[in-house]
Length: 146
Image (cartoon, rainbow, N blue to C red; front, side, top):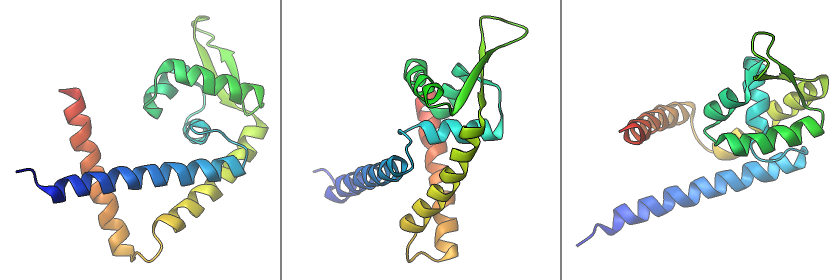
């Protein structure tokens, strides 16, 4: 007989992930960004000049999806693409001044999301949570690789 608690825990995890995603999307909408655009801004803030493929891999999305995201961001003047000086077939992506300003809003959004997520958690509980999520991420990454 299947363990009902295990199924309930899986359902709880899926519901929590959906609620987190929906809350984040709502907050992104409030600052005029589409889902995924915040990740691009954060990646470029950390390392400008990434290629579209590098951004896609680091964002865990398909290159085709990233193409659409970057096109919308370029149209909104948040990013600009320049040809790689060593290989004209490659475009490198950079933040514009507008993208850097929007990045500040993303930082505030992330703080707000963290406050919502961890309301009533102690510092120790938050630390434990992040350690457990890291382990889960490693487990899932290893499973995917095999």
